[in-house]
Image (cartoon, rainbow, N blue to C red; front, side):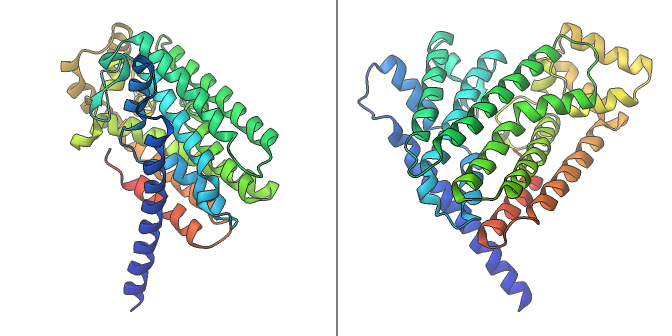
Length: 335
């Protein structure tokens, strides 16, 4: 009987999350009318908004609002804003990373060109701010202050990520500083903004920030790990793409901290001239042998535990159960 009750609870939670995701999926294509001109701008914008995705960020925002009794539908403009902003960052990131594919489709700058992709991203960023302006009864000055601080931190993290590509020696601590900007800042904003709109206390807003930071670290380190280990066709990128781009990922940095001089030299030489595709399998074997992949797995588990500890301090209910379920799904993801 208890097992059956637990299964029913899990189904209720997964159904609720699916409903929130569908709410976002249904609204995104309606943000830009199909007849909007010029097509040179709005065709790529619609292309981006029609892309598939987990919609984790808007769902987190809506669940955070629900923690405090505010219905998800009333914060939908903010949920759409963070998803549109996330889409903007992906369009520009793909240009910076010279990525040819995103979620199994050609990137905007490949399907069109770089100038079009830049304009598309610019429009999406502006749209995200316009959506925030549609919130009713919101403390707009606090909303914008939180939002712009996120933008600053995300850009700082992205700048560090690019700078690390040309620096030989990066510590794990420096990597985490970069991740706290590049990845965690937006997740923190989603949870804090949802909490703010729901009426969370200052203490709970700080706890939501901790939840977002640890979630972001776990998500990014797992992303680094999957870049080397993913087997799902849905991963949508070549295995080892980060190494091919010269990125300093957690498995690599953790391995280098344990490696002897000869092993370090093997990696540094290839990072400096850029890895070749045929070298990726050997690099993965070396990282496994040096413990880099296992260190990444342990780090993901540790940061998810920290996220769960933060969640335990927040109000109970369906929204909290849904957030716990999201953490569980993240832990098990393969793409």
